[in-house]
Image (cartoon, rainbow, N blue to C red; front, side):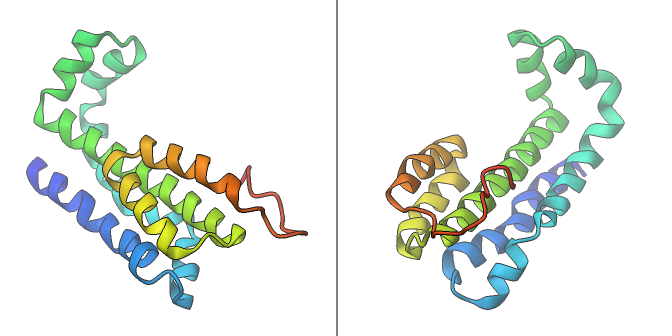
Amino acid sequence: MTATWFSLTFVLAAPFWALMILLPGWSWTTRIIRSPLIVLPVLGIYAVLVLPALGELLPVVASPTLTGVRDMLGTDVGAAAAWAHLIAFDLFAGRWAWLDSRERGVPAWVMAPVLGATILFGPLGLAGYLGLRTRWNRPTGAADSSSRP
């Protein structure tokens, strides 16, 4: 069953990435991506994987060592849970970058590779966007979204 959860993880996130990359101007894309709840399906998978193994995982994450984390990730449940964790946070970061880019007027053709990098390399895509976003000023009177997800 763990392999099924692993396979479903990206499948559940992929439609949201497709909306941001392929249909950025569609009115429904904005409505859907504005909701932070888009990460819930992946978070659900994470919970299904982690909660039954919490007794084994808690000592590893409460007092992490390289060996302990390596051994945890070397299990099917550990790897699948880590994958769900990565996919959820990458989607949340990509969502924030996409929403912020819309406020700033960053062209969709500029954001597409940034979002692709975020899907593949999470923090590097986010770092790329953080560097890139300084080229576009937020419109005058726009609310400060730095504290919003």
